[in-house]
Length: 175
Image (cartoon, rainbow, N blue to C red):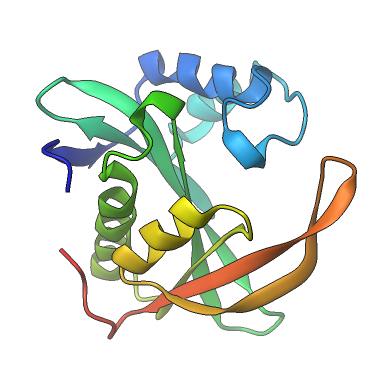
């Protein structure tokens, strides 16, 4: 495990530069790159609710001893077509911070936060079939693989499969 101590904190205006980079630098966000996005959208969203909305939110992942934010975690309300809702989470780390044990801990911390402050029973996360590092990270964060979601994403000119993971309220926290 990394020696880095991390915490989750709200987004501040200085963090918007990272969000603009993810929107405009091909490949920076890894396999999640789906083309150029509006670089002004992060500022508009921040002005609306500081990325702490009722339907979707973000928190920064901060390495405490260096006081640097290498990325962020996000969550959004989802449903399967019925009245019951769940959270879907994600994470984005700058490339130089990947592989240091930060991602799985940030995702586990986010789950603990959501289970403490919201009544929802289920948190899920999807990842690319070829993203072995994220698959391992989700398992370390207490998630279980539920299965393959066939042809769920159009990326690089073709339809790609994804993997779906979940963590339930009564699953033990790895922290």
